[in-house]
Length: 151
Image (cartoon, rainbow, N blue to C red; front, top):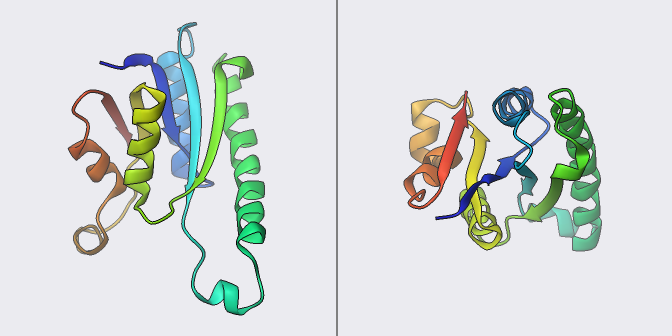
């Protein structure tokens, strides 16, 4: 079983992410062994992106620049809970050919994270049926690690 002190936190620029980070801070702020990886996953570019003379590199740079802002704010929230920047790493990935949940699960497995933390989006039952829920998909696959879903 993976080490629960290795915590993977999925973040974006939403207020829900801030609640997730505050929750993580409250739970593990005083635990020196806790290591946190902030993960920002973004979708592949839409088809029209390339017809407008943009490149994949431009798209990645745009998304990674936005992720740096997300990571900066996330680090501030965690610092308010006495979680030092030396205990935080970041990862920004494009969900290439797979869902966000599969991307998160891949990072969890490769990094040996024992805890995955994500927010529960406020989507309707119809949207969840049509598109699926990232948190539900991760929960279904959580056989050897813990998942915290923050609402």
